[in-house]
Length: 267
Image (tube, rainbow, N blue to C red; front, side):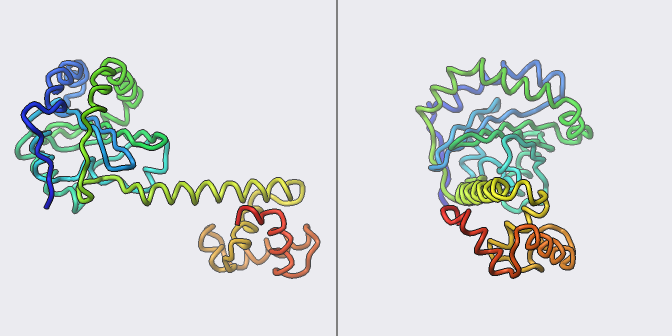
């Protein structure tokens, strides 16, 4: 299994004392033990900075994922918080080592989505600390402000780190860009189609009817549409009858054809 062994003079560990100093006020106030900054690019390259040099070298040498695997639904958001659970199989051993060797247990990731990258800022708390999640939830603004403060104060470090990025083996990546990119494209196409339907039939159809028509044009059955929208099949069928009446067609095939005329460059 491929791992990453940073050289003695690699830039990432050399920044740890500076980062530790920047983090002192936050650590003191919220009882933190670890701060990790990861900037992860689509090509698999990344920046990894941490207040703890020993942990950084150890984690990479073990071949553990960077960052901890993040659910796809969170990666779709511009900003999100992720509580690193004990049940994640890919990160279980890394979490155990974090507890045993570095007295760090509950950890929360702050995820920021960029155009072709993700920033993941991890805050970890000591073993046995009971109020970790509440500390984050009740002080979101403070943690966001610290993140902005860190990126401003450490701007020169981050610029230099860009010149020393490492390439992660596939088993060490905590973000699957192939999934996030395909999901983003699918979401953008969905929005385009729905916007076009609204533009064509805005004065005629309700927003719920626009959604039903969208799924119908995409080839979904009434039953599939009902499951997707959390409605009954009968409700979807009633919507389709109303849509046909409003648009002035008598069959589902006519309805689809009229809609496709407006959407032929998108579907």
